[in-house]
Every structure is written in structure tokens, then in C-alpha cells.
Length: 300
Image (cartoon, rainbow, N blue to C red):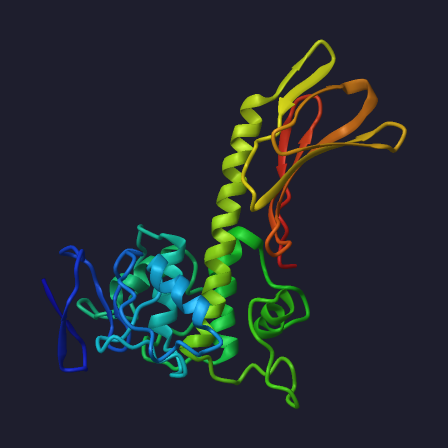
């Protein structure tokens, strides 16, 4: 199937794109349901600081090259490109109306998915708008609200995202939180790499939490269970505080049998990413009923 890139006067054969997918940007490409792409050449970003993030995004299928095969990492990103990447990472399938875009508009399908996911909250819809840091950061916080909550109080979206570590500060000699600076495609790739990795690790933490819950049993005044083995990327810990203010801890693959009368009312399940020290899951289990309280680290 041949797809025409809007406004570029050129066509490109796109392997694996199905009928019904939406043409979503004259300056990025087609929203391909997060399909991985052949890397071909990386000549225009081989020495770029965002190289690894760009490679990850291309491999995972949430960012795209231009039809000439280049990425153009220093070109300022437009709203539709960034929105489409957020939609792809979130894996949004359902839609909600976006009356600001007419029927048949090349970006309408992607924006309807973004609307359903809450990504467009308080955002002026303009697919061709060149994004500043503040505009990109607001889209990030909108997209990540279900995972990490809202931004830190007292900060702009830019300041909060820089403080969190997912956006680079302004160059040396300038105010650290300059919201008006442009966001390049390379900058965007670095931010999106953090989001993809965070979603992946939270999903892994949740998967192991389900495995852990299936192992739990309270019987004869004891709580019995097994910590998931996980993998080498993560430390999975189950811990108790004893009534005499001591600690009991169990790690990946450990089985345990603990007398309830010797511990306080909480058992804590936590998953720690060994590669970057980030949080991949935190759950409090209220004893003895094993009521679950998810306490994943939040932005605020």
C-alpha cells in the first residue's frame, strides 16, 4: 500500500500498515500502531546526544523518521508528532470526539485517541504547532497522570519535569526552568524514552504483584507466600515491621512464613529498578485481610 505524506509531495511504501490507519502528520509519518521500523541509516543522528533514545523509539515503534529516511533530531517537534508518540506509548485504542478537527483531517484519528486518554486536557489543539518545553511538559503530565499522578505543587510543568529528571534543564548560564525554549525531536526522543521505560517497568511490577498475590495465604495465625523471582533488572522485596520495631525482609525468589502476632498491620511489596534506581511498584497489604493499597511513587 502506498501512503502519501501530506505536504511533502512524495510517497513511501510502508510495510505492515493496515487499511484504516490514520495519516497523522505531514512532518512525521503515519501512526503505525507502535510497529517497529527498520533502522536503515542513522547518519543524521549517529553522533547526536539523543542517539540511544532515538534508536529505542525507532525500535519500539513510537517515533518515526521522515520519508527520506532521516530523523532530523535538531528540528523542532510539532504537537501532532509528540501527541502521536504519547498515544503509541500509552497504547490507546478507544476514541473520544475532537470537534476542533474536521472530519477527514489527517490528524483526527490520533487526536481522538489522545482525547480519550486525557492527553489533551487544557491543551489548545493545533497539530502543526511547534512545541515549547512548557507545552511538551504539559502533554507529558497529562499522559502520565494515570501512572504517576499530577505535577509537583508550586512548579510549572517544565520545572516539575526537569526536577523529576525527564527533561533537560536550560543550557548553562540561563534560568534552569526556561519554559519558552523549543523542544527538538532529539529532546522529545529522550523524554519519550523515559516514558516508555517507566510504563514497561510499572507493567512488570504489576505482573509480579499478581504473581505474588496468588502465592499469599493466611492460615493458623501465619501469612505464607513467595516473592517472585523476577529478573536481574529488578530487586523485588517483601518486608514487614515487627512489633518490637525490627525488620523482616525477603528478596527475589524467597519463600516466607511469618507469624502475624509478631508483625504490625502492613506487609510491603516493592520493586526497584537496579539500572536507574527508579520505582517500579509499591503496594501495602493490610493484614490480616490482605487489603491492597497501591502506593507507586508519584510526581507530587
